[in-house]
Image (cartoon, rainbow, N blue to C red):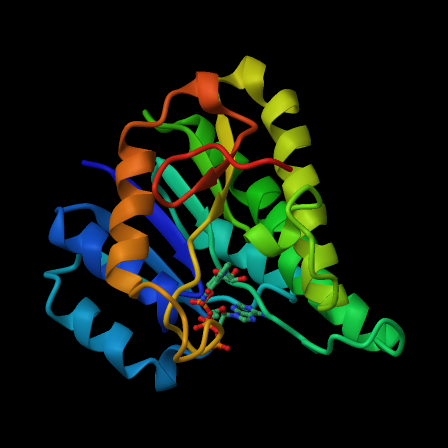
Length: 230
Ligand SMILES: NC(=O)c1ccc[n+]([C@@H]2O[C@H](COP(=O)([O-])OP(=O)(O)OC[C@H]3O[C@@H](n4cnc5c(N)ncnc54)[C@H](OP(=O)(O)O)[C@@H]3O)[C@@H](O)[C@H]2O)c1
């Protein structure tokens, strides 16, 4: 049986990953900041016959990563670092406060790196050995023709670099590390004008991951499977 861990599992893309993995019979460790208020996730977990386990996890709290690692006593085939924040989406060239910049980096860059470190032993012991980062095309330097959104864009570019370095450094352990662009998805973050549903995005991402081999480690991949430019 495949075991998956997903952060940001209470809504949006993360919640849909939980739903689709559970439907396929996977065991799912679903992580969110406030399990008490995560009603949709709790309903899925209650109906899963124990396959979905909900954990409390705030990506900006170092102690949460360590505690989470201690709560899980089984190999993790796929670690989905999905949780993320948009921060201040201003398109002004100047004026992004240092506090905003640092807070977005803390959640979007430091958080996934720290959780990957905390759980690397669990991933190494698994069959699949996959770490997937939920990045964004907004983090592509090659694709940036419109500027703006400084904190978010810079954080996802930094997450891409973390992905690439981890892919190199973990290759001899057989761990595959990739960055994903999920598409422009109808969630709280993507907004109502977004192009695709969470169902379509997640179906695509899971299909890519199902077929992932280590020769694609270090790639930046669109939900539909194409390799994206950095
Ligand atoms: N939607 C898009 O079009 C799009 C495009 C490209 C990339 N992405 C990326 O896809 C991922 C999921 O986005 P989404 O569209 O599903 O966004 P969303 O609906 O806004 O959900 C964001 C998720 O991240 C969680 N989160 C935020 N800060 C956190 C923290 N400090 N600790 C733990 N969890 C935290 C949220 O939890 P709370 O409910 O507790 O806030 C929520 O579960 C993000 O990394 C995003 O950057 C999305």
